[in-house]
Length: 177
Image (tube, rainbow, N blue to C red):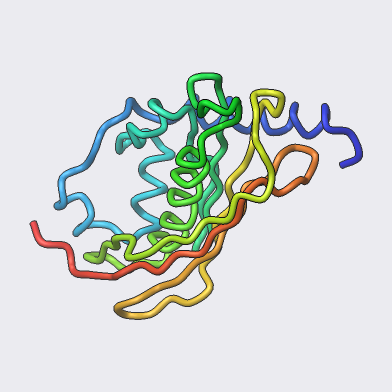
C-alpha cells in the first residue's frame, strides 16, 4: 500500500464489518471457558454469541482478527486518552498491547485452559496523538508451553510507523467453574 488514505479506508471497512457482528460488551462466566478452546471463544465472540470486552468501550478499541498464535486489535486514540504533555498516555498503548499479546496466547489454548499476564514490558518509541486516527496492535506468540507462554506485539499506524512494542509472559492454568 502506497497511500495512507487507502490503508485507512481498508482498516475502517474491516472495523465496520467486525462491529456488525460483535455483541454488547460484557464478561463471561468461567463455565464458558471450560467448554471452549481459545479459538472457539474468539469465533463465538466474533459471531456475537459471547460479549465483546468492556475495556474496548472505555478505551476505544476493538478486537479485529484472531487466528491461532496471533491477534489484531484496532484502536482510535482520542483526546481523552491524553496525558498532561499532550500525547496519548502510555497506559493506553500498554493496554492495547496487553490485549493483543494476551489474546494471541489465548488463541493457542485448549479447552479448559485460561491465562493471566505475569509480566509485560512495553517500549514506547514514538509519541502518539489524535493526528493518527487509527492504530493497530498486532500480537504474536513466541512460545506456547503447558504452564508459560510468551508473546510479542507492536502498535503500528496506517503509514507503517511503529509507536510501541512489547513482550509478555503469561501463566497458563486450568479453569475452575
